[in-house]
Length: 471
Image (cartoon, rainbow, N blue to C red; front, side, top):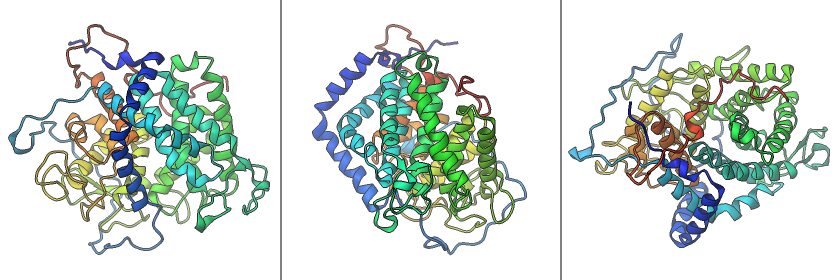
């Protein structure tokens, strides 16, 4: 058995992390182009608000049949020929991805902190990307400075919450704390979508911190994690469950429900209250398996695709199986949930993740053919919908990129994708670290010692396993 030389372990000191940030400051002018691209994507609709009711634009395809039980996509041959017969580029180590993340994070951090201190819940929507990025960067490196930055953002958000009775536009006026949105169409209202969009990643950061012996032993981290868990328990999860889960947790679109499925799955292991734990399981299972009344299940929503062997198809509309299906931009949210739920044993087997990998790699973003750029491996923005139709924006940062942790060939393609931000780079680093755990990523020969593997090499505890019995 070969011994892998961990280059990412060299990042474990906070001093080196700070030095990387100082070095990154010199690249502000270059990285500004990337910022402009990402901001342009958000404004132009690469990360959209959920569409209104009715069939998606262009939904004129034939009806697909929902199976009685989800069919299993077949595993593929892992051999991956390069485009045009060229030798594929070597896989980047996590360190290289982290350097790109550090540059982006150094530049964008002041704006992100400003969002975290805003009392407007609409400002918390894009903040979620930074929380996810910092979580991934920590798992890829073991540098607790990333965790501390993420905790600070969440603490700022929690500090800006106000009792609902003090929010003039709220229709609830109860004792729970929250935020009013200033967005024109929901001005003054408490919006469960905006809260779930952030706190799905907030709870995941808390899971990662709680599962880390290094973080739990750190007096600068452990008490902060416990305080934030208490906040999420009452003023996010309990609040919307008590106000009525229908229409707040169980949503009209798959991707909106996926936010709450991820949050409930993670909170299950964080909370020490048996009744709340039962509620978390109830919510997660209701979204996955369905329930009484009009509610549909995500498990039944995923069906075999016609476009590629082993691929999966789903619509963002419950109970609909016709083309074009889920839009790729919002599909990120479904992928983000399924990847983390699979990794924690929360009901999604490896064949489901492999089906999603085939969907991404061969239908949504093929290396050649429709959606690719003249056969240039890794280029192209991909499709707009999961059936491979339409011209997409290339926005994969919030979910699709995470599939690279399961497949080295896909990870190699992601290295040349040009629609990237800090979240994309951090998750690229996590993918590389996970692949390196299995020996798929090699250092460049400069590493002369064998530091400890990063947290990515230690799987997170199963979702039903309490993470800290002291709570």
